[in-house]
Image 1 (cartoon, one colour):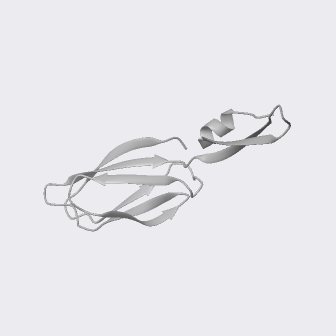
Image 2 (cartoon, helix red, strand yellow; image 1 turned 60 degrees about the vertical axis):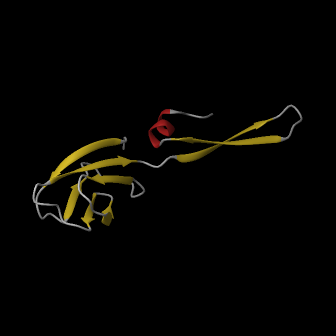
Image 3 (cartoon, rainbow, N blue to C red; image 1 turned 60 degrees about the horizontal axis):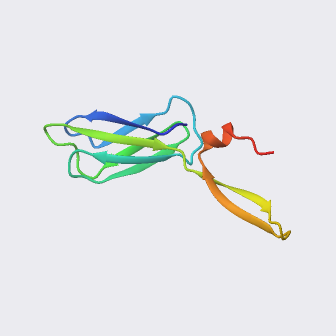
Amino acid sequence: MQSGASSYVIKEGQNKFVFKLGLPQPEDYGVSTLASWDTTVWIAEKTANGFTLKFGTSCPKEGGVLYLTLYTPMKPIILQETRASGTPHKERIKLSKKTQRDVAIT
């Protein structure tokens, strides 16, 4: 899954938002949110196929906007090289899953 941000119109009185993913994803994907009105937002349910967000305060009379960013966490890759002295040197780097698929280490 690639990272991406979107905005959604939320109607007056709405106290939850259901988001369906187009394709199932590993469940370690992340969700970041920002609502245009004064409320708390939390993930009430999350699966490989989507998630449900709940609002602590329902959307006000004038409506609102919910901003979402979906992302895949970065996974560490450990590279090892041998120094001139013969002792191994390990270095951790982080690559996104997309980059991991695109890079072959031989």
